[in-house]
Figure 1 (cartoon, one colour):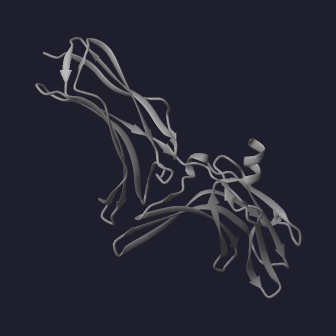
Figure 2 (spheres, helix red, strand yellow):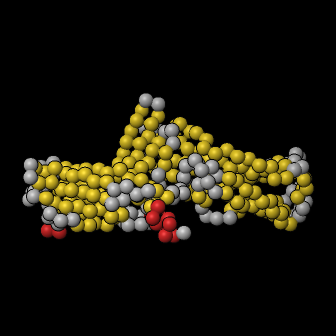
Figure 3 (cartoon, helix red, strand yellow):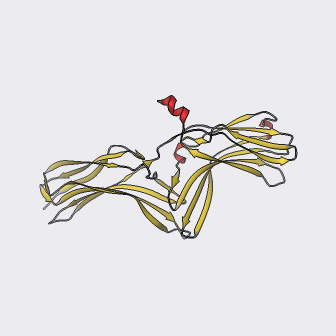
Length: 276
């Protein structure tokens, strides 16, 4: 009889960046020696989209890799370690769980025993996005409030970097009747299942500037600092997660007016060169 105390997958890190290697080992601790046909591990990544009824549909494999570590072989009593390595594709989407669906990864191990019950283990793998160096682009728009009044909005860079402050410049021209302006970084979420399409926008960071704090006919600056863990950009065949800046004029007794500017997730080329 085989007495196996422990079969466990040990990973060399808490998370892994797109396009890098997942390294780890399989630990087998047993009181008795036993014969097995093979020892194998597999990396599996899957994406799924939530249907309007809440069920998961549109499952697709994004990664499917398997490697045989040993076999046929004899595993000796005591502790045995089997080492493995998987290369994550650059195109593998990051781990994600949200309203639009999910992206999940796991490493599983299987020990095939010819005259006994097979042994197995599984461990979730967290894939984090690679923060790409991007050339910043200036973007601007304006909220028209009357023939002689508006609110100008400018972002010196359209790059949203996890964990970094995001600068927005704004200027009021004329004398519009506003209570203030609301600045928000919005997570845009879209899911598509066949002919069904649905969208949801969720603010992840916001600031409000009262009328008395607005700058008239000169530029003023507001800094938004979203939680780094909230910024994950995902693009698959069935779901999209992106970000925009939304600036809204808070107008008394009338419908508010707003503009949106698209944002890109990454790191400025200038920041990349300074850090190297």
